[in-house]
Amino acid sequence: MTCATDAYPGTFAGGDPEELRALAEAAGRDLELAPAEEVLRWAAETFGSRFAVAGSMGADTVLSHLASRVIPGVEVLFIDTGYHFAETVGTRDAVDAVYDVRVRTVLPILSVAQQDEKFGPRLYERDPDLCCAMRKVDPLNAVLGDYDAWATGVRRDEAPTRANAPVVAFDAKRSKVKVSPLARWTQEDVDRYAQEHGTLVNPLVWDDYASIGCAPCTRRVAAGEDARSGRWAGSAKTECGINL
Ligand code: SF4
Image (tube, rainbow, N blue to C red; front, side):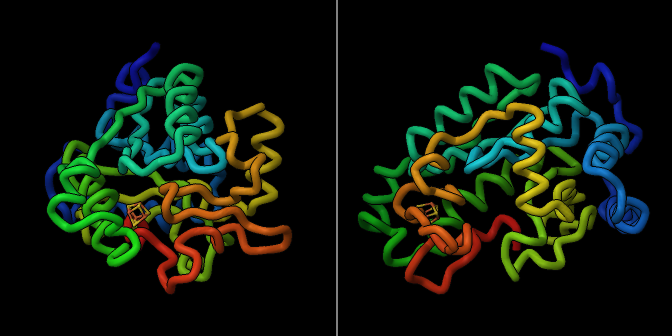
């Protein structure tokens, strides 16, 4: 297993959020039309080991695979909410074993049992925003303290809320640089890459789950339905808050 810092020591000295903002804004302009590999290479060259990739392990693992090729040994962050399907946890383990990455599993402060005790069972039914905040957003925010920049797999074609997702931007809420190398990709691009490279797939995809999050908040989608319609179905919620 290689280490990302072997190939990319990073050029950003760290520290100043305003410097990070300027860096992100310039890169956002320069890399808008760049291939995903070039975007990832820029992030690695600039931030070295202070850059990580968020890997949800829902549906495809294309971003983790791409990152492993461009930045061998890169850290992949997996937020283990305690509510994942067994198949998702298995996909995480497979990615860790097969790709040249180091998966870092991040846990919420409260276990599911502790959350149930404090807030009552099935909080996801009564207040999914609070549940997502405690089990996804807060853990990510905490672990990002170790990094200056992070990558997500968001794509503009996934949902109206993501239609303007920049390739590189300053994540003002976290004072980090947020990189979305696949922002301009379509589902067809993802499928083509997955086929060409034989990437790992969450097996639930073969059981009509098109977009996979926590088990209580994910359902199968019918043919022709929007992929993300199976997430928080029956409620107005469409995002966990990580990418807002
Ligand atoms: Fe809770 Fe559902 Fe959000 Fe998972 S997706 S953290 S179970 S509300």
